[in-house]
Structure formats: structure tokens, C-alpha cells
Image (cartoon, rainbow, N blue to C red; front, top):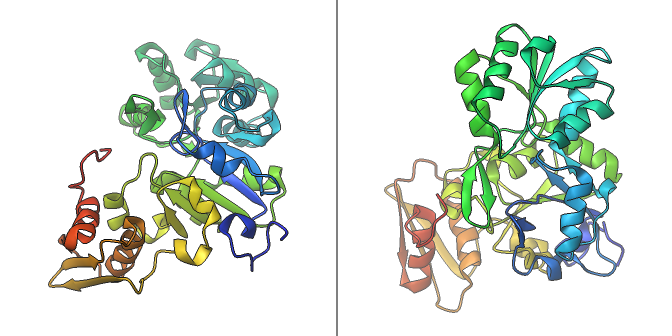
Length: 342
């Protein structure tokens, strides 16, 4: 079976390229997500491209980290929001223009690579500001950016993720720093990363994909980005977004497929769609979603059927389950499940 065959029996074989998010999907900080290597490193499978909103590291650095964790990756196969941000700037301002960089040296390098000049001070008369995640961002550089933006500089944010998954849990992301500048300037940036289209378009273009599948852990970035670009998507529940988030997801944030882990790539596409299931009863009564299933039914199967019913009946105020599995999934959907990642 050739990869990219729309009639293939297994999900991975229906697509010629997997456009993979990193944080929360492939790894969490310094550690690989359990089972990710076995699910992705498959002979004869679709090509892997890594598409990340995190602008703090260079593509070469990211590829090296992936290699250390056992994933095949080259610098060319890593597409970052810093590259897309640099492209947006190069299309908007003249070559050689000064760009104030709020972020790491890796982001500054991408600015230099497109023929612009990276600076760190408002006194250098920047005509644009670019902002990406850096763990060292502080008041002083945000103040320089505030002055530039208030003076009329064009502002591009690599991404607006409010949180960032790490091995210790969720920490503040670039979007939280962007929010500080928005409050200080009463301006909003153009956004390069997901869910905006520039990064996804760059990934499709570079990979020469005919049938790409976007895989990620966030409905507001990975899945919304896929939908904005008209691409199929798989949400894995290994990172940020939870079942409770999916319950109230807008249509623009709803994935094509849903699974607990990347192992689902070896399942049938039909089984992974959010749809009613013959082994699950899911119905809405007086704004309450009731879910029931036998004890031998997988919780993710029940979750997909429950979401299908919920999305057909907006305005649900509570979720209740009948039986142990139904109750467990109801707790997930209502946010009562132990260990929910708030």
C-alpha cells in the first residue's frame, strides 16, 4: 500500500506527510512522550515534518534534540514559527531594515537570514518588532518593544500560545508575554504561528505534501490551524487540550480524528472519527448529556460518541454517566477527572 492512498485501511497510510506539533505531542520538555517513537518511526510510513510554534530554538537545535530522543529529523524537516515570522517581515518592510527582537538569538538569526537587521533597543530606530518565546524575556526588552510599537513599528508575534507544556507541567507561553504588550500598547500583532495560516502554509510548501495530516495536542492552535488551512487533523490527548475543552470547542477547533496517543496511527480512520458508536448510548435530556457503555468499551470510543452527541446539542449544562465507563468519561468531559491539566 502506497502512503497517501485515501482508501487505505490504516490512518497513517492515508497521508503522505505527517505535520507534527512538538511540545505536548512528540515530547514534553526534555522527555519524549511515551510511545511516540514507536508510533512515528515506521518503515515505509509517511514522511515526518515537525511544525512548532516555539520560536526559542533554531531548526538545527530542534532537529538535534529530536535525534537525541530517537526521532529521525533534519534541519530541513523542522518548520518553526520564527521562520514564518521572518518571512512575514521580509514581505512587509525593506531589506536591511532594523527589527527589534523580543526573543532568543535563534529568532534574531532568522531575521538576519531574510536580509533584515536585528536590534535590541528602541534607540536603533526599529521599523518592526518581532516577538517569540524566550525564558529570559523580562521588563527591559518588553519596554523597548512597547516604545517601538507605540511609535508605529509593525509588530509580528511568532505565536500566541498562552501556555507551554514542559516536563514539570504547563508554564506561561509567548502569548502571555504578547498579552502584556497588547495591554501596554493597545495594539495587536500579526501572528505567524498556529492557528494563523503562515506557519502551516510554509510547512505544506516545504514538505511538498499532497495529503498532509496535522497532528497536535491543542485545539486552539494545532487543530484550529489545520482547519484554517483546510487540512485533516488528529488531536492526541497527551498535552494541553482535554476532553472538557473539546466539549465546548467551537467548530473551528474540532479535529477530524481523536485519540489518546499516537499509537492510533495504526487504527482505522473511521474508528477515530468523532461520531456515534453502536456500543455507546449518548443522548441529551434537559440540557444534560447522559453517557452509557459496557465495561469492556474503551474510554476513548465512549468519549468520541459523547462528543458527537454534545456537538449536535449546544447548551449542555452538565454531563452524567451510567456505569463505570460512562461515569469516567462523563468526569473527563465535565473536567472532574483526576489530573486534569488546567
